[in-house]
Image (cartoon, rainbow, N blue to C red):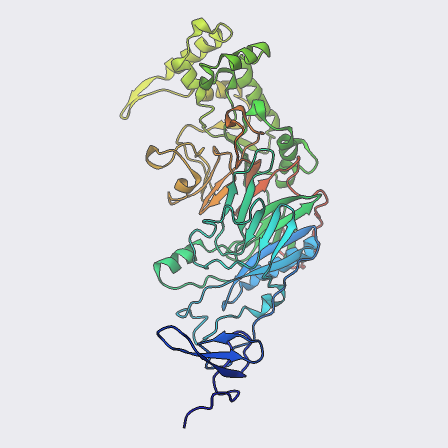
Amino acid sequence: MPTPKNVPGKHGYCPRCGSDDLFHGGQTTNYTKKARYKCKGCGYQTTSPLAEKPKSKVKMRTSLPRKEVYIFTAAQNATPIHKPFWANLLQLKKYRKADLEVLPGRYKNPTSQWTQGNDDHEWWADEVKDYLFSARRKITERLVVLGDLKIEWASNNPLLGMDAFTKNMCGVVGHGKRELNSIATPQHKHSKIMVTTGACTIPNYTDTKRGKLGEFNHCLGAIIIEVDEGAFYIREINADAHGNFIDLDMEFTPEGVLPAKRALSLTMGDTHHRFMSPHVTEATFTGKANMLEVLKPRYLFWHDLLDFHSRNHHHHDDWFTKFAKWKEGRENVRAEVEEALDFVAKMTSCSTKSIIVSSNHDRAMLRWLKEGNFKDDLVNAEFYLDLTKMVMRTARMTEKGAEYDDPFILYGKKYLSKKNVRFLRQNESFVLAGVEHGFHGDLGPNNARGTTRNLSKIGAKVTKGHSHTAQIVGGCYSTGSSTGPLEYEKGGPSSHSNAHVVEYANGKRSLLFIINGRYCLKNRVRKTQKSPANATPR
């Protein structure tokens, strides 16, 4: 007996509202001639009604409270959370009086052990249900959270193609892979940042190549955003396998909120000492609650310490620039070198070691010795000849061919002979907790030009400088610079920013952006919660 056309409950369920009150609404006009059904409840029309009543959809928040501190993470659908990490995130929320939001991510994964037998998959772990946020909302005039955007969870490049997606605003995207891009903007503005959150759920991927890559790149983490007077400060929270993490000088563990051990290192944005921004000096070295005071890093890594502006080879045919340097008394190479080295010595405490990474601006001194003519440069003639003699003494033949030492390193070692400073030779390795710090970033694989992306593919974690552009690609973190716009940037759109990279005691890293002499809130709380009696002393 044929099914009556307009009897409720006989044609399945509405895919939109779940109602069983569907009635026959004719046929499609294309060649397939499918039956069309219409829902009496919501008016939705479909040619594919559901055979079973769908699960009720999770209600998600669509508004953000006004707060100074926000924490954003992401959760994959149909996947359990990482319980220790989630507990520590809740501690951070309470400790900082922050708003915690979980951006939903979707990866329909029928072969996963966690989604077997679920036809719908549109569910999230009970722990995060009250924190799910699924709207697009501004935090400031320059920052928007994209809770309504679900990027395929196993995507290897989650920010690909999103440079202009948020127009002139920075954007936060929920995804399980850690990535950060800086996008060029007009130079009177701060660069635009697009960043992913990391995830609070455990890895849950297929056994395909795409799935295994997603599992390899899965980041247990979050983003913390501090808002103050229109400015905002973004930091990454990267947890270890146990779910513990460090944010600046505090560690969040099952034992409570504890003072963190000293940071392993602080890698500063390219210094170019003669043009270093006072704001960066204040935030890093001299201001109240500066980075050295708060983080207490064991090592300071300096990239492009020297600008070598006094005899930059790019000025060879620019007599206007040469005249300006002569007029202002800025031609003396020895003075520029010693000013930079004195600054390193002054900022290096007895409990910290400075590592000066071989960089292209530092190596410009060698090019000057090769191409310059002391007879036409009487201001620097004596220093030129002294350096030349030092390099000549090191010239030697090896199995690779002729070699000689870098004049900047030779002079620096002599000038700072009793200081706590080490100079790295070009290609010399320096590894801390599995992270390579010996690359400046100007040279890439097989002598190609170095980029953050090609150095992310060498099979080792890397913290580098050179590009002046804060960026995270895979295991490669790139600093920004420690200067304002430099003369050779020509005034075009720029992705440059003032940003350092901290490597915490647990080996996890975070970018620290500097805005107006600060890198975090003025009133950031630093009280330590009481630990249980059986907590391990720090």
